[in-house]
Length: 366
Image (cartoon, rainbow, N blue to C red; front, side):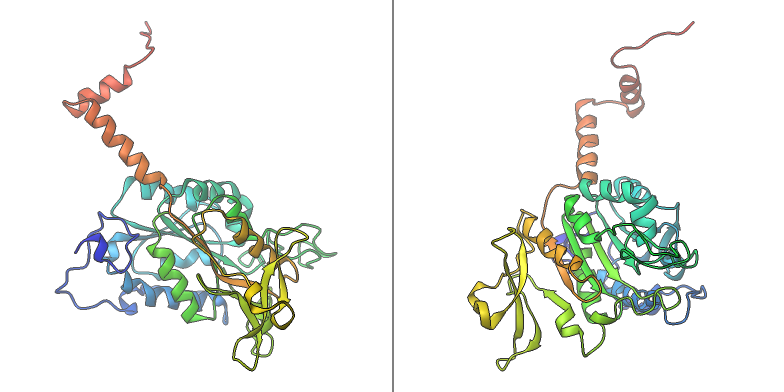
């Protein structure tokens, strides 16, 4: 089967596929024998089940899939998947995954991280993986709290958050992970919700198909230390007004349904700021609504949409794929340079290596 025939054409061309005469894979085959040890009600369970159910759709051998995690509750993920995996260093999972993806073209590389792991000690590693556009998919679990270390505020905790480490309320200004990723020139950026299995699987599918770095922020509830953080976008009586759904090629509408069965609110250009804002459709007219373009090479509008998360962080959030564009990847280009160097220096590999080491200025120490 050629790469073009794959259901996920962004997966590396060198991957060895599951033989067609094998029985179709199931989520059970991607479930390890390890006891899952998260707190009862943790959103990680829902994400794990979604990933286990989704991985068979890749059509890959399990040994061609690797999950790398850092430190935190979410970083136990590799233990619970029957694939290759590594529970790595605090904040450094993107760097380790970069090495794996560059050295092994035949692997589908995934990173599992949390808001503390990725955005605090790992912030520098995350942004450079995004700007380099390495072939990997990063799942950023955001529960807006440090769960593993028992409830300290995190880089995404809202200002004024009272925790064990901020008894008088946090004075930090929180990161918006989607805005951060767009600012780092990420080629694929999305946001989804742990409890919405259908939407989560759809976003995972698109992220896996993308050639380059895909960042998927997953709103994930921590029932012990930050329970109900995302109630507004989950409860039936509030989610219509809280979720701003993003679908490429469609008008951005949301809110309670009108008599025509469409949302009564939408996004329009804000002439005062140059950004975007929420408006009532009846007041501005449907022809003024923004049509979402995830493939726009200019990330300005996607960034403006991401900023709506900040205006009422607990009560409103754009959900979906913000950006999905194609550009050269770091690991593809690195491998191409190696091949070019080989072609430019024919002969025995050891001779080529010796010539490289002894090229330029050299000294003999006696």
